[in-house]
Image (cartoon, rainbow, N blue to C red; front, side, top):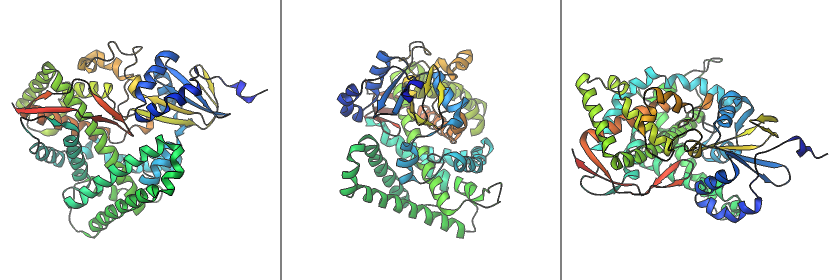
Length: 448
């Protein structure tokens, strides 16, 4: 009897259909995913070869099961652990098992709310100086401006003000170049030999090494300095492993800093860009944000207290991230055979959860494609949060979620306080890379 008969999988996507759509999927998989979900149900499967199975799901029960309830049986796939780690090293994003747990326990205290509060002053100053450079009374692409803002906030939070602009620009350039190539490698596996023979792999590994060297020099300069710094680098250098009392090794520190740069700046830039579009398309929502800021500033000038009162701004951000989640998909592989919902699955099954589709699944959301911030206010918020994954879920939930929320709330409050935003984009376009990247989202700003 075939061992496959022990297992049952969701409705199957025919392999020939997948190959017919392959080029379109490479460019933008999201429209194809939606078509398959609508036809095959909230989960569908694909059999590759004789024994390899892939499941894609927008089912909340499955998301919760693999990320929270039985997360120990579900490890990161080789897309994350092999492809990403080749360029990004073994930081929190790419590591798994015991090494991940050890690192998470070590780094977690640096992201405690009290520690984050200590970074808010620097964060606020950087945001204000970035907003000073925004164009007025002309239409511009919002993403590059938000990318620059978010990158500098992460850089100044990591390194306070102790790094040259030249080094910062180089780190940003390398991160963007490596990521573009990484997506090509993942989406075009059949070209792996060509990428290697043509020298493209070697070129990008060399860039990754250069990035390592720049970060290493910054750490060595800091170690040799007698100055006091109130930044994340200082917090990470001061952490100690519980079992040995030792600090992080140099390479591990470099790897964690690279992950913080990437996870900390691009996802935030994406979310801010989409949110500016929604504010610029919904003047009534923008007015409510302005009214909330005005009221909060009349009550306190303490920035931490202001952040804690930004209820409506948070709701706007959440609704924007529901419709366009910066981390739009995640994947896992099961270590052992398991029962997943109504399905009996074989070990090593690759399971993808599309947060983009789950966040728009009509089973969980009324008028799922409409922008309605009130979903995240009052009693409604409790229900909405059950199906909401902007930072993942479970033990591997994004460690920098609190940092990102602070940064986005401050950026939006300063922009809305100073400017009236108008969106000049009727239909939002995006590119689903490692993160969901906005394409040509154009806005204009006029003095309020």
